[in-house]
Picture 1 (cartoon, rainbow, N blue to C red):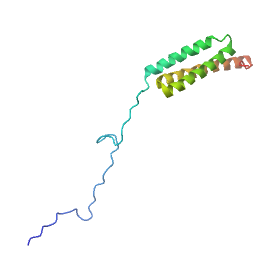
Picture 2 (picture 1 turned 60 degrees about the vertical axis):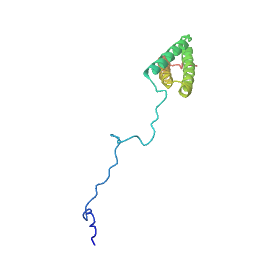
Picture 3 (picture 1 turned 90 degrees about the vertical axis):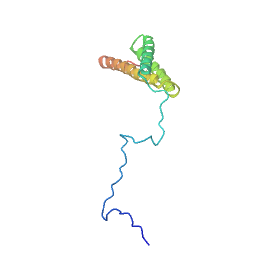
Picture 4 (picture 1 turned 180 degrees about the horizontal axis):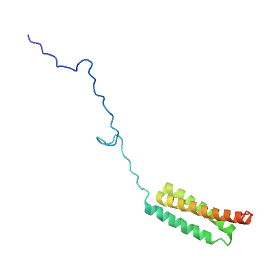
Length: 129
């Protein structure tokens, strides 16, 4: 009767190599989770369109002012309306256009605030009341 000899195994005290988890830099296969793509990505053209529209909007409202006080208040009102529009666009429309509107509106408010601050610094009287 012949017995099968067992296969030689690792030597006692031999170290097994540790399996390494891939870093993800070089993926070895398909992703483990689904990849979602944004249906309406923000584009430079959308941001430029929103910025141009907001600049025109602030200009039209700024031209309604006859002095510094009315210019500043018209700019604040126009900016509030523009930001409300940007919020609606973020939720239901083009987020690139909303980004352009928000950026230019903030810039318009900064210009109005700087003009008011300069008048206040040079005249010594708060010009908005």
